[in-house]
Image 1 (tube, helix red, strand yellow):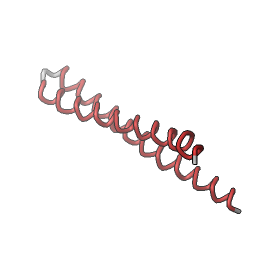
Image 2 (tube, helix red, strand yellow):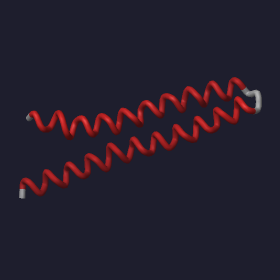
Image 3 (cartoon, rainbow, N blue to C red):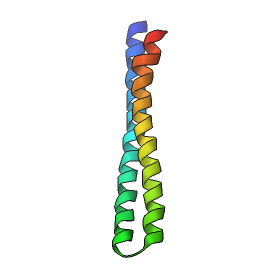
Image 4 (cartoon, helix red, strand yellow):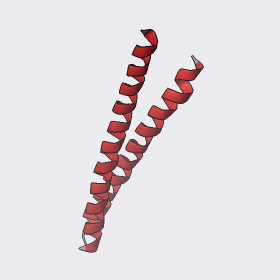
Length: 79
């Protein structure tokens, strides 16, 4: 039973961490598209603002996915 519960918890951890990461990366894509449109319409302030938001969301989403994988494969295996 313990092994089964550990498998369920690992699956939930992947779903949560990867789900948040994918959501943030999707939001980053939307922000970066908006930034590109801002630059295309000569709205530098819009482009820089949404570009910064997009880069930060992209970093957060990537770290969420990498951190989830790292924790499940590196940290938990050394306990």
